[in-house]
Image 1 (cartoon, one colour):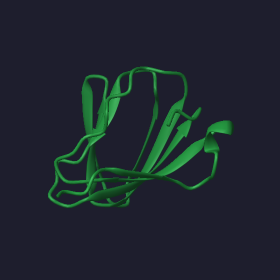
Image 2 (cartoon, helix red, strand yellow):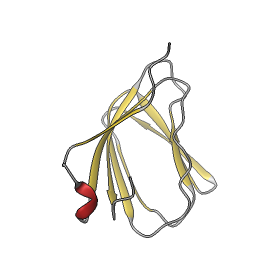
Image 3 (spheres, one colour):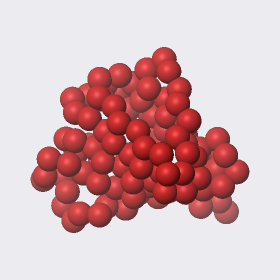
Length: 97
């Protein structure tokens, strides 16, 4: 059985605050559910592996040691097209998870 994508919060009950930091592990060939446009901003830092960020009609590859930052006013999702798990910190404001 293949491990699933994992989300874990750094801050208990973060939904009551302005930001929601998460540690996310996306397994190889997995993708996260697409988010519709919403208010706020999102930031991520890739700890290991690489991810593909789909932001509107553009796609970006973000590797270990790199970060991303965007306004969440377009459809967006993240996938791992690699052969190893990708681990990254993801901070969303306002909280959405």
